[in-house]
Structures are given as C-alpha cells and as structure tokens.
Amino acid sequence: MAATISAKWRLSSSTWLNLSQNFNPKFRAQRCNRSFFLPGFAANHSCRRHFPPKPSSFPMAMANFSSAASAHRARLRGVIFDMDGTLTVPVIDFAAMYKSVLGDEDYARIKSLNPSGIDILHIIQSWAPEKQRRAYEVIADFERQGIERLQIMPGAAELCTFLDSKNIRRGLITRNVKEAVDIFHQRFGWTFHPALSREFGSYKPNPAPLLHICSSWDVLPNQVIMVGDSLKDDIGCGKQAGAFTCLLDETGRYNSEHYANTDLEPDFKASTLGEVLHLLKANFELTP
Image (cartoon, rainbow, N blue to C red; front, side, top):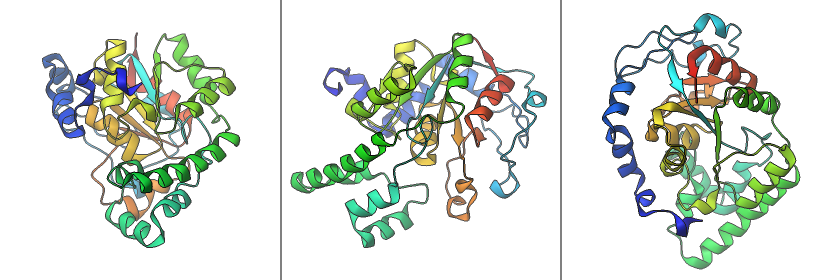
C-alpha cells in the first residue's frame, strides 16, 4: 500500500508536526478557540490547554460525564482507533517481545531513556538487513500468537453502534500487520475505514497515517479524536497531527511515577470504552 501513497504523505514526522499545526488558517483559529470541560479540567480559552494535576489526583472513574458539558463544544466528525489493547483485549506481551528483539541489557537501557515507551520498529530500521529480518520474524511470531487469542474489547460494539447512529466516521491505525486487521474485521463484524496497518509505510507516532485518514474523509485534524492505549504511539500521533486525543488506560499503569516526566498529555483519559462513549457525548458536537 505504501507504494501507492502520494508523496505528500511521505514527509518526516517533524515536518508533519509543523504542517499539521499551520497548514490551514481555519484550523489555527479553531484550535486557539477550543474550550471544553471534563471533571478535573479548567476552562480553556487560549491556545494552550490546561490539564489536570498529575495522575494521583485524576479520577479514573468518571461517573457523571453529563455534568461536564462544555458551553462551546468542539465539532467532532470522526473517531480514529488504535487496535491492539484498544478495540481488542491486550494479549501481546510487548516487554517480552522487546527483550527478545533487543536482548535484556539493551532493553533495560533503551527503556530507561524512553519513559513514554519503546519504538521497536523505529529502532530496527537502522539495523543491517539480516539483523532486521530476524527481528521482524520475532515480532511476527508474537503477533501471530496475539491473533490466535484475539478478543474484542468490552464496550467496542456499543461504541461503534453509537457512532454509527450519529453518522460519525470510524477509522483505525495500527502498527500491526494487515493480516491482523483483516482477522479483526472478520471476528468483530464491524469495518473501520480507512484501516491502516504497518504496510502503510509510516506508522505511529508519526502523524502521517492520521493525516491521511483526515484527507480521505475531507475533515480537519482538529475535527477528529485519536483513541488508544499507548501514550507514546497513539497520543503522540494524535498530538502531532493536531487532533483531540483520548488515552485508554484500563489498569491505571500511566498513573505510575514512571510516566511522570513525559511531556505527552492526553486531552481525555478513560479506563473503559464505555467511558469513551460518555465523554464523546458530554464534550463534543457530534455532527458528520
């Protein structure tokens, strides 16, 4: 698929960061005027959004989203999902996979330098071809095991039903392979379009896949939200593209001090897809 992508989608992530923030005057104006409430959030009337205190004081269980409605809701025209750990129950042991590829010593060293997460695909790009081949074989083996144990995340069907009732577009971006996406579609019974896999050529946290989806939908990046369970990949991708972001953190792992020093902050945080549904209702004008 990557071979057919227009040259404009092959820019570096740093170039995309500059373009996505400035390519459209309407986008800049709307971004500066965003204003919304969420429990723990202050009203924001400037270009810089205000986030809640660090996770120790952030309530993961957001019971009353209806009381959080913003006076000026942003228009939301599409939702872009991660797959593994977001629409599907997490089954891949990524730490074990990274250790198998990098070795225990390099894994510990790289992990200490990257508090928001390890980008294994980016790391192995610089390796010699034979070493790359062995690394991809290890990754593919872990991914095949994940496909065999694939389960749909609770609340996914209800969320998709709600989005369809509002005619809100649904897209998917995953660093997994197309085979996994095809099997997911077959077992879930719902189709996400576009659904971009690793074969796209640029992968999260590079914002190119998200911007490609926005272009295919003919919407602005600040009219979509990226929902995923990875702070580095999903939130990083959404932030660089200029989209809203929602971090799905089922276990509260991002509440740990390990992530206290990262610069990435999601616009929203939820522990279930049911909470994602409620925050969409409470904080956005859902119009196609």
